[in-house]
Image (cartoon, rainbow over all chains, first blue to last red):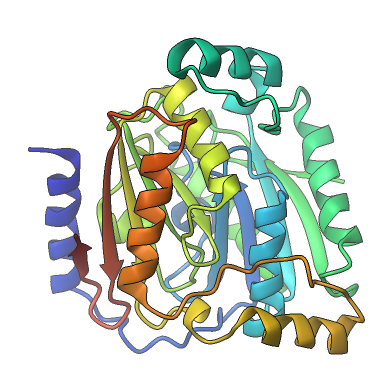
Length: 164
Length: 164
């Protein structure tokens, strides 16, 4: 069976038992989690989020990219969120390459020119979390009274550690 | 208790029972889900994903933004994924505003100038899914043999419907 067929079968089972069809659009806990796309992280299970609780923004690294800021503006302005947590994680793929290496790989594999693309890799997790908290706190498009906290998730233990 | 304290308490309980500390970085099912940050969607539960199975990229709308493409390049080039599913959903916040309205709100609430920002709202779900599939399929930075499929998730029934 293909991966998509497997997904559709799982979804059919989920829908059969589905009881949460009346939840409102705004997140009940007024919380946003910004984290990495990494397959080992299940934000709902690992951070205790039920359907309806929180916005979850995910990208490579959990970075406060321009697009994450776009999502945060929509979240805060239109859907009333107030708390933002930035969660990067140990053993992250973003620690394993530099822009120039990935650009060279794209040239070789696809003949593609990615010389203008910053893939936002990093070399130190505490630093990357602090950078992304600072980006969010200093954005002119986000309210100044947002609460922003940063954490590192350990994929080997399942534990969060705060970055101050 | 604050929302972040509640999250940390849930995480401590998750970590106590944690048994998945040895998963490899590449997604076992070589699958990527690109979907919306909406609080009502739990991709793991709704689409049958276990820790380690799939990359999950989420932003406002589940759009194939430049940053989603950045994440997809890292996913496909460095971590071997092959199947991409784009999942938008009913009752999406992106259907409720236009760029000019949100820009005006930001001017009034924060004195901020967002005249250069496209917040990527849409007016038709099938069209937005098709647009994002086309963006992914035509990206020079992604391999031509990726399998890309699109779906709409119904937040009232929990069901997926394919967009062809």
